[in-house]
Amino acid sequence: MNFLFQQYIFPLLLTIIVEFIIFWLIIKDKPTKLFFYSFIINSFTQPLGIFLYQNALINFYIAELLIFILESFLISLLFKIKYKKAFLISFLANIVTALIGFLLL
Image (cartoon, rainbow, N blue to C red; front, side):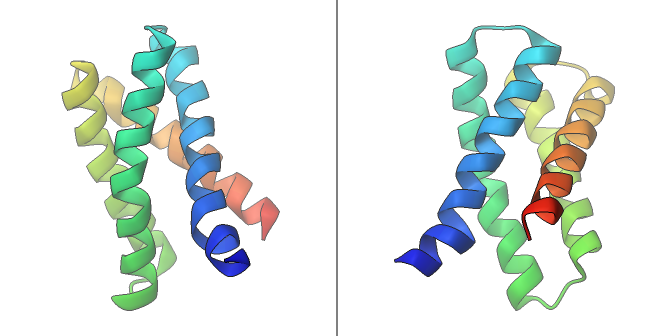
């Protein structure tokens, strides 16, 4: 249980919270909506990123790039914003969460 929490659940929860804060600071919409979208996006992309990195033998940076592109698309779709803005939000959110991840390792 400790391994599961440390390796999967804690990083997911931390990512959801950090990206929610970034969404809230930039998009400034209803907090419950932003949190829900952060939960939906990251509940899909975080396990996918872990799978790609651990099982598909993809370099961390390539896995992160694929997740970044996918999240850009999802942000654009869910928030109904232009792809360019979604791209910038996804870039910022992924840089911040990656840096936090590196600091906690």
